[in-house]
Length: 342
Image (cartoon, rainbow, N blue to C red; front, side):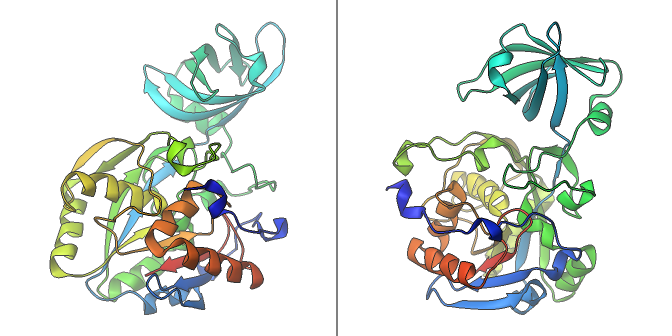
């Protein structure tokens, strides 16, 4: 399957640079995955499409201020380090810019030496393995020295860090937000629960794999980067009982979907409490074992995320809906509008 088959025209001015003041103020494009029919609503209209007994599954990961700016010892060169994945023993997989200045043995100081990182070597995707030295608590130093790792297509500065967190963010570890969840407020989640809809939570720490461009010509050649996931017994029970009743599982975001499908594929659609690493790559031809629908944002052309939703709703339906979204001037990407696929 050719990567070019998932390309579409997107004017740059439709890339949302700032979040709306009201999280629920975004628009909602509703796509019928069977017929391809499209409806245009406000996000608060989601309540009209969910039913008592359904379960929304949300990713409760929390974004860490993973972008660090420092200077190289010996030369004073300015270096940016983006934390991607903890490897244990204060070692992290990172992206470094400019990478040519950071070779094995190089040391970078942050905050006048409050935090120091030494390069231990390179990764197979051009990143660096960095080992950190510090006194105190690493996450507290990150809060003090780090910045939120906004995607490169967002040029505006974020004045409120919490606006790049979901209201239910709990477990720190992501290099990017699970952005479909940014549309929910605590009050709106309570309104949904009042309808008899269940909420269940998974954790997937979003890393490079979700956003890395597909450099191969064909989908089959692309290899996903692995990300850490976790599901506990209580949330597995809620999801399994929903399926047993014949109600729907609606994943909030592609990260929730990938977590559920990773576990469900192992156990014939049943969910079990477990944690691990997933590199699951979902594209057309994939047969879903857990989810029935999804709330998601609008994604980059030729991205693995467009391929994932095409697996759920069909490539032609998705690209036709995206064309209509562009014509209707929906806001795209992390701070943009939402889509409901049912």
